[in-house]
Length: 242
Ligand SMILES: [Zn+2]
Image (cartoon, rainbow, N blue to C red):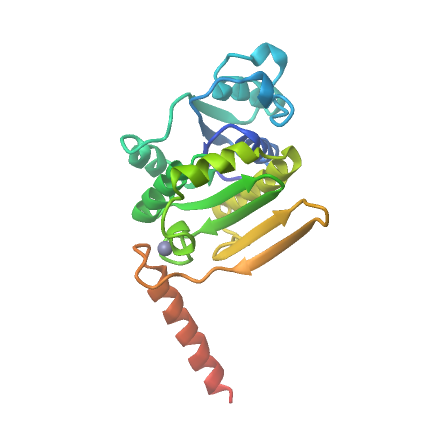
């Protein structure tokens, strides 16, 4: 990837580490990793980059060290902080693309709303148990997270998601999908899952599905008007041929 685009990865857990590894492997030069948490023993099976000696260190620091040792061309800005209302606009505004790799639903919606407001493309992802999902959002052009869910889940729902745990290979696969979307976008290719949600279900009968997500009328992202306009355009085009 020849691009010097800066990519922001929010969350350095199972999703974020897989995405950052795939980005660095693909030649990404400038990554920012944001995560306030230290490496814990329970992370080691799922977050393959970390070693026993990293326990207690900020995840972003340990990740920077391991990633730059393996991929010397990548420059990593490691921020051991939480993305919040106070810093979201400055952080997101300084990047070309954002990877949502957090397990906090409120932070996901903060990423969505800030990216929509600033016009920065991002990829949403969520992993619960054996099921992972991802959807790319091109602000004003394709459905956003609020078109899909409208509201963040309540605390009870969010807590039950955390308790469900996540399965390493699912987070790894979804993280790779997120990296691929980022690379496509910053190199001028079309993302594959803008306005579409990819679901990877690694249950008893594993399968991958991709379903279209329509923009919601009245959503602040404004994608509904844009996609309606585009549909009308293509219908008129069709009629010309009949
Ligand atoms: Zn929307």
